[in-house]
Length: 220
Length: 220
Image 1 (cartoon, rainbow over the protein chains, first blue to last red):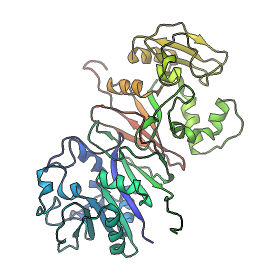
Image 2 (image 1 turned 30 degrees about the vertical axis):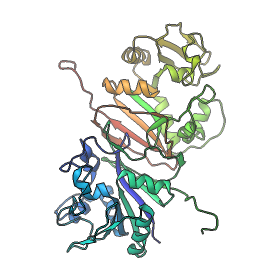
Image 3 (image 1 turned 180 degrees about the horizontal axis):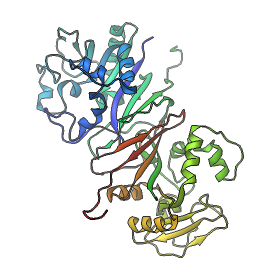
Image 4 (image 1 turned 180 degrees about the vertical axis):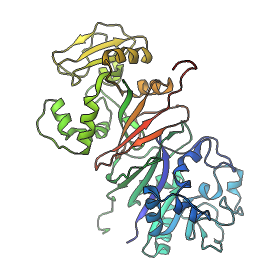
């Protein structure tokens, strides 16, 4: 059964991007440090057309996550590469280059209507102007029983959390402080989760939470 | 050899206390949720004069930490019980009652000079007006080779981190979002740590960081 999963890397002080993002450096100052734990993994390297890499606990976690993945949801800034004048250009090709490493349907939450954009490797960007919930429902249909991953940014993640749309949170806490930037959870309501598993790793702390969904009466 | 350890529980969104602390509820709204993981542990219960409790991985971690502990450093608000008019009363007995559960020298960083306060169980509160670094050095001397724990609050913890005084960070990330309150790391400089161990637990995510200390030339 499809699970809607927030899958995101943060700093210990809760930032998903550093300060002063640019088109060349959309993760902001030091923001790339949040993701360093994946760059040496065999699975990640293979997905990005690189050879080699390690087969450790982190790699197994990433491989398991990919094996059950059916569709991706992301925000406009994550598609276009951070904040800046380019993000309002409805014809921008996005930040991900000629070979976006998804190979899956990717639903981009945006205010700009535009046609889907397909790539030979199977990646298809689709643009959803009706909000996060609609993007998640379209992704659920496209995933065909596999999982839907919400990859960010913070705005889309927080909207999904607030609306009770997440079945699971896979948070990867990198051993860094960024000191400033974009916070993952800003101004949310207090909330308790069930903590499921926290595999140890020398490079990152994975935390998986399950949240009992607040559902309307008669909804299930 | 003495290690200076920041040992503190935070929410997933990085708060060490919730909003609106009062004398009765110094951890603020929902702040007690950060510490729920310890209340059922046999070691914690024994330290607080209660019977029973579980002997699990979390309990072993707390027991190991206590076994090597020689002295504690805390801020004035943690001593007096949050923010409020009472915290400026130099004669206030503190928030910890007649049997403060430390049984060790506790160095309170404050602006108010006052005499040490001793308890039959071995707890001695000493008041340090020369700042965090002085408090840590006095605690180091009192610890006599055992470790010094900085228990909070956020201000003392951040000052110690900024000044490069911490040998280790034992962060306990509780599976909760508080949404507002006092952040553990506010406005720090970007920093990378070495991640040492992250034992899994159903109730909390323990993260231990080692930071190579920035030392003056010729200091060691």
